[in-house]
Length: 381
Image (cartoon, rainbow, N blue to C red; front, side):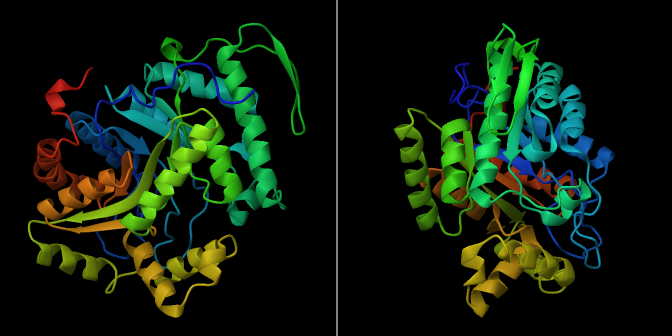
């Protein structure tokens, strides 16, 4: 069995041409490895306030990071985290229209348990639950679960495919069934109820290798792809959507990043300098970078100048696409990103609650005038 037959929510859960989501708020410091005192707390109270503010403003989704252990440094970057499915359930119960994802490491959660858990979350949110599937990479975290040796890279995605296909069957089939695959041997599976409203929760994957992208284009609704430049990103989107169409599927492509938006370009640049150059948590950044290099061929072969650029990007926003400037600049960058073919942008702030109101009031109206966003009053409840 390949992709599910249940209707997807990929094009129906939001009418906006360019989807916007807040990323990484379930972790202390969010996605900025910085020592600034106003860095994000990651507390439940702050997450709830952020989610309700984003919901009221018409933001499309919230995306957490699946993190079990921090990266050390002076701040123990992302050392305090909220588990993502419980986090999603709590926020879905306290919001009205925003989609909330859970980020789940497939090798650490049994598919029968996962399928039931995700449907429960979907009912809490009345169809607003989304699933971000991770097939594994962080050795330190997997060791915490007793997984001392991960599968070979491509085999991880074979496992993920079997795991996700089993869940899809549980979401669709009403008769009891068995699974007898390479990784799972499950007997007499019974799974009720099905997902809310007869549609499938939105499924995301961020695999970037050949095997990872093929997994995503076969089984996910949204591919999460890093964008180093808009030109390279546009080519990646074309290749990704073409591969999905070769499997008879349409997918959305989102990219991660960070936003520093201030009334003037000078103020935004000065804040970036303060966050990164004056207060970067370089111990955490270098630990994270060393781990990433073990899994990323291009990083291992990068020049010293390229590595330094990556280090600065980690300090500001975990290495995603940076948008730093005044509201006109931020809106124009998002318009360019949409024109490059990206259907969504998942981004972070140094402090979501402090910075989002200005973004909401100054940038969202500009995106409406550019035709990338619907006026909030027209969004369906």
